[in-house]
Image (cartoon, rainbow, N blue to C red; front, side):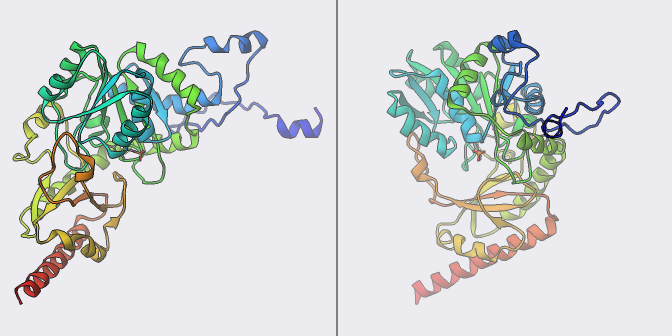
Length: 398
Ligand SMILES: *Cc1c(COP(=O)(O)O)cnc(C)c1O
């Protein structure tokens, strides 16, 4: 072999006797075939075969297999973000004239996708009260192809009665999809509770380090594999094996990170709920949270993400007081090692229900820092809100 050829041909080295815990990062667009016949029949290799980089490598298959087992499903697809997983969980199953029912508290980009894209393609989009399965009964009809769930609901944390909603949906021949990002496949098993598809923003807890975007879509039944796989192919959607290997690495510590974050959240919440600037803490594992009974029945554990609502006179000062934070960072997303806070508007993202509270909710994600530093931060932050509130009230009185 000439030198130039030697440069581009990869020599095969011995892999026998090498076993490591880490998963190799297999990068590929081209997959090489043994012979022309194998190439010609590559389309028949099935959803678990290898035919082109877009359709998976041993690295992405490893992550898919881990998710499939934990979600108790038939197959898992990886997508470039959690939102892509939600969109692709709906798109292959609807056409003009169909209807979708979406939980009012769904992740706002899901609402956006439904309102802008599904509507544009002639699909009727309707929203239902997430905590009232009978609202699904009222609105579902034989054109309804998907009932979309997310439990707890984005920011306001409503817990859904998934088994009941799935029963109603299946009675009308609709599929049920559920976004499981808050609980992760460790703490909630939507497929075992009646859903047909479950999505995760692996971006959050599963990867766990705020340094990548990825989503997963796991199906319960083999019949759902082909329509999703062909949609992914036509849209050209796949993920990088480098990112998949980072998710696999983060996955190994998911259990301890989640437990630690939930314990940290519980400690902070005990203090937060007593503070005079606070109205409510929205967190399903609190015994007096409205969805607590269903949460206890269906979930296996909690997480480190919760929401705080404030007294009306304190609300205008929350955003400015965030600048006192030292350990908490201000930012979107959550589930990483760093604790985060983000003020969220709500009313714009509700249509089937009305948010009666103030239009600012503080979302808190507890990370892995020392709880003392987090507590100090919150004490200073709340004291600043209280100071600013008192000053305004004094000015008003004067
Ligand atoms: C963040 C989030 C997503 C989207 O994840 P990305 O990977 O950022 O697209 C989807 N659903 C829920 C509930 C989320 O919190």
